[in-house]
Length: 585
Ligand code: F6R
Image 1: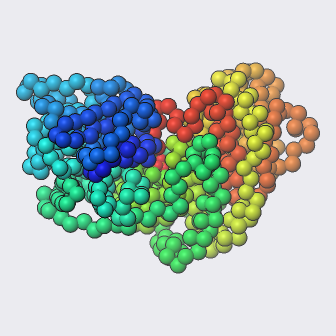
Image 2: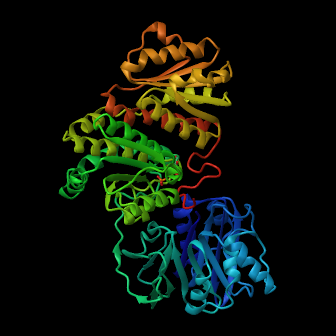
């Protein structure tokens, strides 16, 4: 993954650090920058978050060219030698890279034959060592030898240009009044420019304050249209919240209002209509992690309404499953970032087979959005915390909108009722349970029907930010194996909001209780005192019709994970080993 940024103008150190903060969601194992002033490189590298780098960097208002990088380690351990920027053999050229060069071992061997050695283990350093001067022709020559994905920004000690190249990793250019910025994410341009250029795969070139030169994959010089920088309610700060994660959970309320309003527009209704008019006989929903869980919820919504084949699959397994896809297949790809490599790969596979491609995404300029025939935006605003919260809420809500539209039923009325009754749970109870959770090494979530899908998402949220082992299973499955693990050291969180399934779930609760397991109930239903006795604690949430409960129930469970992470002393915004945008398969 990794985030990269390049800059030409005054105050380069400050602006590069500011940009790195904005792309830090892409990785935070280590960070580095190189600034060129008066023909000399000044380089800083630190292990850990951008804040560690920021504490070392000496700010300088004077003009300079610079590049910077925040790393999510793929090839090579987390170390200073593997931290970008990397340098050419004569140390005159510096390079930052996002992506994976698949043939880097062969390229390294070729360098070794020329007695050129790398200091670290990264694929990126190999590319830096392939340069002995920086020009369009040397860049073109190097690119021709690369197999894999990349976004590069490079500079040399002697030049006044930043060089760049893009293939399957995002990269954008922007010119302000007296500066130039290149970055993995256009959010880095906010405050400096009003427009930006989106590079396509195979594009490469150079940019200075006065001049921009871009070539396409066929080595033709091209002009690219500038896009307006339009960030809807992009909020730069935590608005008084301690972390982005908790702010984003509460933003679900605004996201819901936004979705109700936006999906009244003629433009978006016509996209829903286009899907309705498409004569499909099968539906596939595909995503990874949290987006996959939203897909499972969509599958459940659609299955209850349509008597056709509907499958939801994890993107990384999609191609292995031999699904039959043709021009009657409606293929829905769900991705907050729109850049997830596994999802893109499954999308390309479906496209090749003639399926109709629909993207549900939060980023309308993303790769997935660009590759789709129909884009349904979730309008959730930028999600900064690595653990997805408001995007999941929005994805489920949008799948509810889509299902109701296809059925010819109103979605506005039920969603307005969700909006009036939205319930984020009781903080005191959630904090008390969060403290208890810290006493356990193993937590299980169970549920039936849609509550099982909510349990899966709640379990993922808990494990990824607390590092407590957690697993979700259908309540009825427990007795088929996992019950063997249950004793007084195990906590089971039971999600039960469906009246029809409640009694059966309580049978499973008794099986856990009689083996000494501890229990927390999450419910919107009336619970009589005999049943209540089985539970150590109960999280009560406002009841709504079954179809709306998935959006309601997850909010308290997201907060439960958040409070537990705080209890453990973890930073919930930046869980270890993870990154926000997963651009490798
Ligand atoms: C978990 C989480 C991940 C993402 C997954 C897909 O909290 O955020 O599981 O949901 O990496 O990412 P997108 O939606 O960007 O494709």
